[in-house]
Image (cartoon, rainbow, N blue to C red; front, side):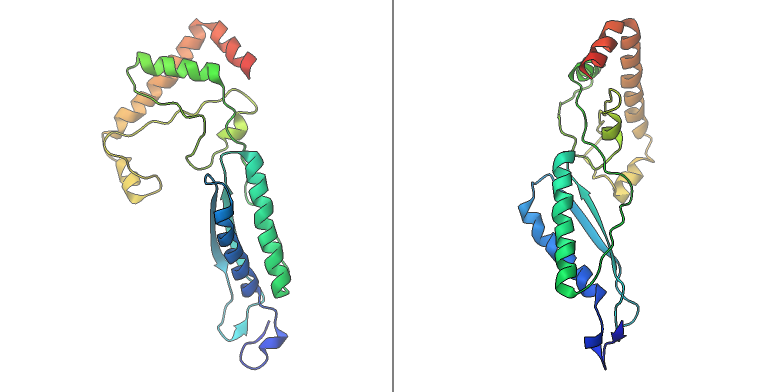
Amino acid sequence: PAHAGSEPWLGVNALNGAQLALHAVDMLRQHVRPETRMASYMVSGGTASNVVPAFAELECCLRHTEKAYLEEVVEKVMNCIKGAALATGTKYEVVQWGNIFDDMNWNERGSQLLRSVMGNLGIAYETKRQWDMGSSDIGSVSYRCPSFHPELRMEGGPVPCHTKEFALKMKEPAIETTIIKGAKIIGHAIVSLMENPSILQEIRDEF
């Protein structure tokens, strides 16, 4: 740190390093695949306007539908941080929070079963092999045992996740229809596997 008014040249500005890293990550956005998500915010950037900040902290959340490409994105972001530190004469430390999730290991035989169950229940569906709804450890689970993650649409018009409107929808009586529909899909799939052990074996064999 240093006094920002009398001797700023004696300080090393950690906030400058963090800001430059964030700008570099923003510039990186146009050079990554469109499925990539990079979200960042400044956690800490100093405590007084007349002191050169000796410490700054930022948090980055990086996502992609494929783990292999996610690792490439992480490397690119690390280069942004390294370059910013070099340019500003600062030092950096990276702490990883949580785990890096795997992408979903698709199991076609099990997906066929779920499509059959939904068809029998009269539930309209579409099949997407890429999961584009945020992050979950279900991907990591899917490389250890056959796993499936069907998503259900709520009654009424579309409502974005992680919003107040979405939270309010969870309190409406109509949400019970969706919950019961999901329970029926799970229940009917389990019964089908109990009645047809060969399907379960085919799922295991494909896995």
